[in-house]
Image 1 (tube, chains in turn yellow, brown):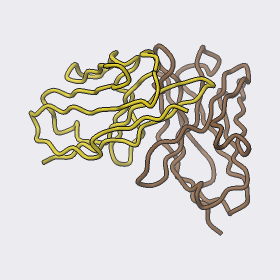
Image 2: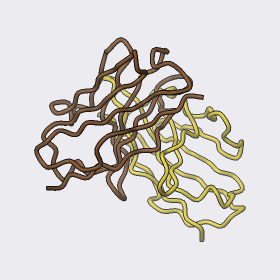
Image 3: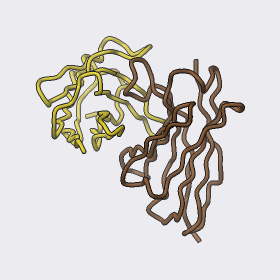
Image 4: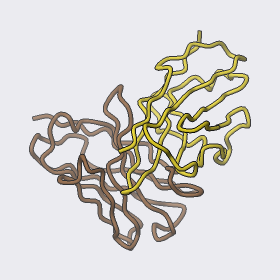
Length: 109
Length: 119
């Protein structure tokens, strides 16, 4: 089973700053199989990025995803107040199995 | 736009069976999508439980496979989850979800329903 380790656990930033969230996989992950979600308190997760770098419908272009080897990154440029939330990375592997990272909490500094 | 809505008891006794249903609206369950269940204990992360295709094919998380059954009712555009022999560790918000563009991700989510396991 592929494990995903997200860092940092908590990230404290101010609106207008840039956020860089990391997700490291324990084994190689196919780019198409890596996604990012945003979750706010009391809400279901919302898909932000699929296939490592593709924005989901309606997601602003300040959100972007990239990879370097087994390291995946979610970057949020110019943080807006509504961006403060918990972010999860997710991978899909065979046998069919979705696994999630433990999450990064992005909080207002 | 596909919408999902979970329903079922919010309280289940230990050793009994948790049963939830997810209604799919704004589209047919018989599209080329897999439909999943995901759970989240309070204050913790996300755990994928399993998925089903409209043909009835299923895949389950190995850690839960012995206790989980997911089924589909195409006539009602619904799919269901049964989790047997529940304990307090199964207390969580349960979400139904559907895969999104490109597959291999969960693009559609229900609002979630809290299930508490308690005597």
